[in-house]
Amino acid sequence: MKFLIVTTAMPNKNTLRNLYFKSIHHELKKKKQTQIIWVVCQPNKIKNTQDEFSNIIDIHDFSNGFELMKFLNPDVIIVNIGLEPIQYSMSLAANHLNIPVISFAGASIPTYFSSNETSYHTFRRFFSTGVPTDTEEERFFMRRGKFMLYKLFYSVKTQIALKINFIKILQDFFQNIFIFGFNKSPRTNFLANLVLLHFESQIISLQKLGFKKEKLILIGHPLLDRMSKKSTQTTNTKIISNKIKLLIVTDTLFEHGIWTFKQRNDFFNSLFSKLSSDSNIEFALKIHPAQENKIFYTNFLKNLNLNISIFQSENLQDLIQNYDLILSFGASTTHSEISYSGKRLILLNSGTNLPKFPLVQEGIQSGHVMECKNIQDLNDVVVEFAKKDIKVSQKFIEERKKLFYKFDGKSAERGADAILNLVNKMLKLK
Image (cartoon, rainbow, N blue to C red):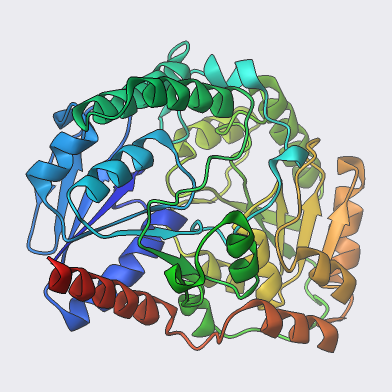
């Protein structure tokens, strides 16, 4: 069986999206001989590679989604629930060829949060020098905007190949420009034959959007399967040692156009300078596995005469066990993961107006998550937080149980079963 997905990051990068697909593919392989086809969607061409279990394909090798689907002929494709132009192209082509389409409600832990609270800037995004997966060397003026236009015209060419009404093509084109330009939520993908849900609350949300109940299947969250095998803690004992070990988990605010170049640099300059002024605080960095540039951080720290460990590909849950407390900022799935674990977490004000992820507010109420509004107070907050016993509240534990469906480590397995059942059902109808 051939299982096709579209990715913006190379498969060897452990992004949440890639880990999500890998976990389901891992379970599929146990049940049926399965090859995963990674269609890589980046501004630059990449080299195609293939082995027994995977096939990496560059999207630039095909002029439109219909041509790609006919050539690769997958047994099933999995796409986002939001209609991003490339995902939309693949969905349209798959529907035309009677290939099952499965959508999922995002790899990050919160499925939906309103974009009204975010602080993206329209023109900054379009004229941005790169996409989140770019290195510093790949960046140039308007690279992100040009790549967005490439994806829009890819969708247009797919619709032309499928002989879709020209008025409809124009409507989709200008609607996509509006969505990108004004940072609106993508249109919902109603082309899917099946939707994989992670939380029970999603059922009502999607039914209100117009999805039929029989298309919705609750599997739990595959990314949380790995966490179910990790130990959680209910108590953070006070740090007796004079040295406090702090792990900074970064967020991709600059890479996604929320921060300007100056905002990013000013923030990190203040952060690193403040922390390094206290000899009793030892800190290290954990940056995004694909969307942040390790060289940038290395050079930035070097200019401040700091020799700090920078982790990128390492597993976060393994890393946090080696530190007394965690510091982060922005809005990230990692905040939910850390709060879930019961570990001390400080959220530093990043000058943005972003929503809190699930379990963060509950962690603040429990007492093992703390907010720091002013960076000038940070060192005092770190020391005070580390030097007292922190117990995870029973109310938090109950809220945690309510959020995660079953949490038995079998979400990916249920996802694999749902995919196989759909593929077998559609084969019988052919």
